[in-house]
Length: 345
Image (cartoon, rainbow, N blue to C red; front, side, top):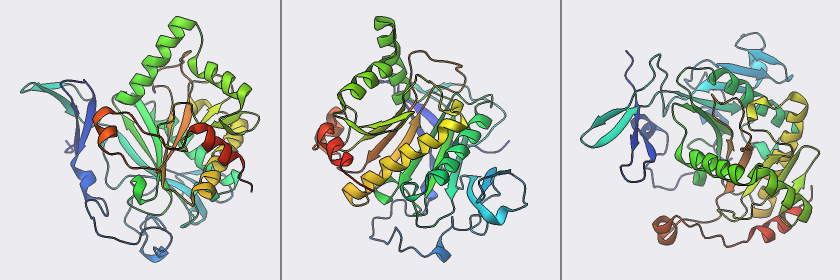
């Protein structure tokens, strides 16, 4: 059997899980504290993602051509690829036909890091998602969805996280724009707490907490940054960092992967607009975004509302934040939203 390269470990006090993944330490620039050039000045000829297969990466598990037609895994027309999904060369999890089981040893609980870890690469070397056309961004979202739908049927997969690290300060070890997908055998602690909180509100009030929040924000508009027919971009009331943004569907929906093609282009517009305004307002900040959605094996959650969270790197955690878990936000969301609303094309 293939040797697994990670394991989930449980904290005895909090009950939270962490992932110990030794192979991740082999990524480029990990633990390298020397100053080095990272962004657009990195030449294409040295970029492992400009031509992923030439750079030693595996063949794509899914790709789309520049004509915006799905090409699957067929080689015909592959030279015109615009987005491709490949297995991560330095995975945090590894596939296995055997689902992991809990092991208890010397007071500690752990189990093998079974799952999938993919990289979603876009073709332009120096053009981020926030600089793409709506149709190009829609193609990336389509790739997210289709890979999600494929992996959610895997026996051991309980939760799938799609995320994007932009810039060295956000944890991207390669400058070329790319996203990642991790399909894991547990529901992560932060996501689990979010589910529990929305469920408590639903049991108490009888309706979705996210829908309640959206109704209030759309009526007051003080924290709204952008909206179209189907999506809204807002600065959340209790932002965790300055200029945090979230993208919500305006109707109740618990599963991102069920978004239909007609509405996907509206989501692409909202995502591009949110990232474009952050880039202009903050002079191209590093940022992370991720999609929070319902668990893979749950058909419907009446209390939960899927959404994007975008967290620009506007500050550094210090003793107060690490010691208490309470984030300090220097720019209130009302001011951030007002500033971002004023950004023009």
